[in-house]
Amino acid sequence: MRNYIVIVVLFFLQMGASAQDSIKNTSILLVPFQLEFYLSDAERDIMAQTNRSPDEYRNYFRKTLDLKIQAELEVLGPCVSLLQDTTIRGRNLLEMFYGKAGYSYADPVGGRTLSKSEIKKQKKQFELHPDAQTAPQTITTRGDSKFMQVEMGDTSFLNYLFQLYQSNYIVSINQFEIKTNYNSCIDIANKIYRRELLIHYSILKANGKQVRGNFCMEFFPSSTNSDREIVERTFPGIASSIHKEIAEEIE
Image (cartoon, rainbow, N blue to C red; front, top):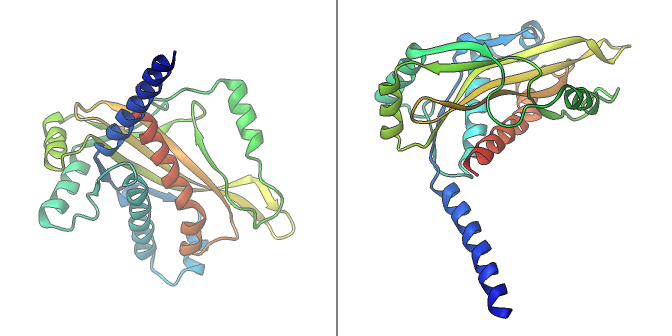
């Protein structure tokens, strides 16, 4: 009996070690969103609050989001960002990726799709407290709406990227959105509404198959218009959600 227990314990320890080795051996290539796919209905408010030009704070959002996601993904294994590869080759490859990529809206890919009753329950769970300073809450919407996906028809170029950067996965950030929900008023007296920051992403394997794809969402009040404050409130949760998606795929 004692020998049987020892064998069972060793089996589960080996299984755990194999899972850890799988994660450690995972290498990821991160592709930032194109500035053309930055969409926001809060531009006037951000411009009034931020001492930057629109190009400057849009690039700030792009670079900071990239760094936040890269830091989260490096917990799983080596992560290289094409935005951080400032060599001539790196910049050319990023432009080639954009040039060869096709984008379209699709239903979420991978993971379990929520039923209508679960979606309704989830929406109710994430209703905001009427306090404008309430911390944002992160959700990943599944089956509730379309997301912008990336499609790579040139699999030879994709294979070249995987081999060059020795990656198992490519995480492509496809679209950045800020939307004001005028039906959700946080503070009626001061006309403060709920805003939603959405990041659309695709996770690709070397054969070009999109194994996961969706969008992450963070909520913040329309009274928050500093680019730095928006980043602090929303980007950590977004990066953590994408980390979780990759971790689930690896397992």
